[in-house]
Image 1 (cartoon, rainbow, N blue to C red):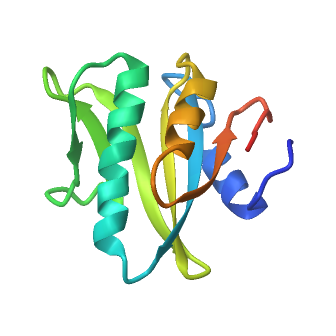
Image 2 (image 1 turned 30 degrees about the horizontal axis):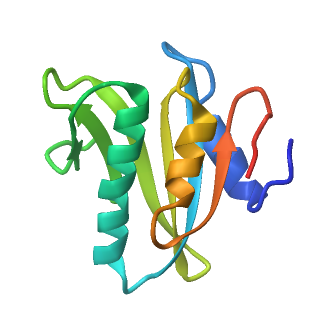
Length: 139
């Protein structure tokens, strides 16, 4: 495993993307946003939706909060396509050590380096870690 900023969160994220019906890759976005900055955290989630959806080539997407089903936890969201509600990404918003960490996972096959570069350019992003099932996590 590459030098990972938060090994516990890395391991937990890796467990989320273990092989299933589709191959997934994860992204941990460590922010400088504190617990009382939930509006800014939401705005960052919207920006991350735009970055991931554009790199995935899925077209326009929206954020589904899942508050109409018991299958979703608090602060768990999905990006779905406008055209047919196809999966684009899923995320959890976590408050850890006083700041928000956003964990995203989505279909592998995107240009991950370009995704990371675009995410690192967003406001409030301190550090980004890629999570793969092949132990090639990078910051």
